[in-house]
Length: 622
Image: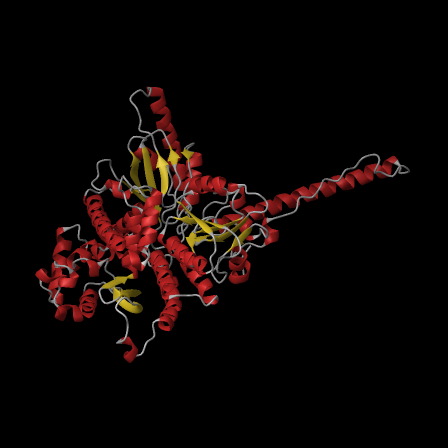
């Protein structure tokens, strides 16, 4: 059930209880958690925080704590599945779900007692009507001799029996027609998966309604929104609209007269709206490194080629910037160059066909020394949360990332920036390797690429968000490099080894890179169907079934390459475990696998033709 008054129906309910927070492992969820933590601390609400990265962790944590709590808050998890069916809670348990994943499961929408959805209804939800999805089971009428009229003639009994048979036949036919319509409605509603309003923005709206919003909360809401934009979870129009909403709050919280500005304390926090450069971490890096490792510029210059490197040199020459200046730290550049740097870069970028070089964003100042863009914090927090260090667990990384969002832990934020630089550098090097060695292959209705064991920095791409970031950047770079118009409209499926010992592979599916893309993804359902059709063992453990970071896992017996050709495009972040083939396999088994693969390829090409080419057949139910 959708909650209409967040303050009365949610916050005042949990305010007098002990609350258990389940928080997903993404930056937007962390920011929403920080806002809710600040509200709870303000009102002395007792709570327990449990980070969860997938359904298995959520189920385990719920079983462990369900006896101690009656109110559960789920942030960025739980809305897109039947939550009661998965957790099997007691009847007095209440779940408050603040989740960006769409579509919302219809059972959660129409459950009035245990599921409370903290979701903005101004999003385009398109929930099916209750009568189209649910129908009360009619009890079968008993026609016994005791119920019949004892004085009835046999002919009257036969007539009544015939009428009842006709009536039952009509009811069964209506039932079948209703079930067919229900399947069609659910198919249309659930076939695409996408993201709604940032959870951090939803929590900030709650704080604002209660007049408890602070500048720190506003900054966390900004970082949550920027995380959605950085990871391509929302459209550009949605981003610009939400930026406008937050800009009004920024003006309200940070409006000061010139006389008052001189009297600010050294450690003050100040947020400002800016049209800044679309360059990753450039204020904490060198301008040259940022240009080379930002997806937008690297893809359009084609920096993996010699010609692309020459174009970069021409770009720098057009701006009149010496290499000595652009290759040193941004903070060390001459002040005279930095004053008009944004305008110089934008002017030259327009000449080179990059007309979106500046974007609407926000920055924060901690005193006079520390300045961060919202995207800087997103990259740093994401890198901390998916740090590949062996000594740290998932929970430790979660706590580190959560702490880095506090202004009292700037050392952790700077550490995250260094990890982010390493991640971005490795991403571009891997993209260059894939494109130069032609690892991106067209396979019918989709492209695919498989990272080999032994690939440099492979451990950095063992997590869903990191691999999906690499996949999105690779697809954008491939679209800029290929001359094949058809390939520019295809999605990408990517595989990377997850565990060499267990023979597991992480697979990610990315929708086509088009200007009109609505960021909707149907690969999760298609992959589930393909895994089912190939008799593969699957494990759907991630909250996002098809968006960035969304998971599924499948086991097959042909190894990573054959498994990839057998699997249809899937949701991002899906894990596929493919044990390597062994030499002990008999000739008969190899022939059987070859026949099975040959039989499957036409099914994949027919069943998973992208919807932008034709509609999926109604017989395929995901």
